[in-house]
Length: 248
Image 1 (cartoon, helix red, strand yellow):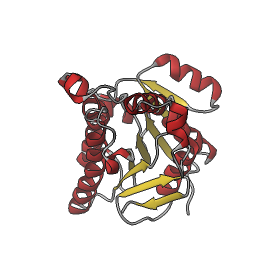
Image 2: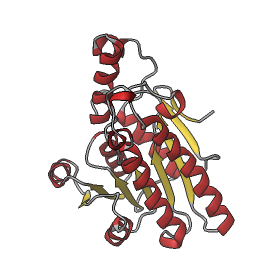
Image 3: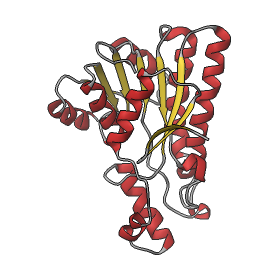
Image 4: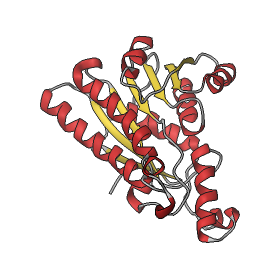
């Protein structure tokens, strides 16, 4: 396994939760790290608590976002961890706007940055890692709207982008990483746990008690470092409490 020392790592959605753990893992590897997020207040807290991190406040779903990010720091490793909270209502009670929230955020941000990379904005050898979800394999609960489909599309997008990079001889590496289990202590995780438990008619604590082999945000951060520094085969990976593995 190699090292991220003196490499540039950009984390989109890097101010909180899993994104923040990825930022911290990259800083621990002595990388130069830029955390990008919409919320300036959360980024300010991050800059106080994580020494050396650079920050940039912007909306990653804007067409101009890749230009602004790459002007701030040209990445050797680009991680897309930004995402909307999943819906929390039966399908028949959702509007299309609610149902498609993760397509308009998670997928759109991934699409814009992968597109920019394939258009020659990243140098050969750069790695792009999209943070997906175990829901992409399981389908997620019936009250989570388009969340699982959006996270599955991120996996498809990583695979499609890798094929295009290979076809065009760009020398880029595209990967999708799916945390296998829902994670308490993150905004998406806590919202999901409460939502699923309510849908099932049980307590959140009882739902969590039924989960096994759970990974932590720190495990995800370590998995991103491993993918960014090792010569792995394939474009889809899963991290659980047991560690990092290629997706089946």
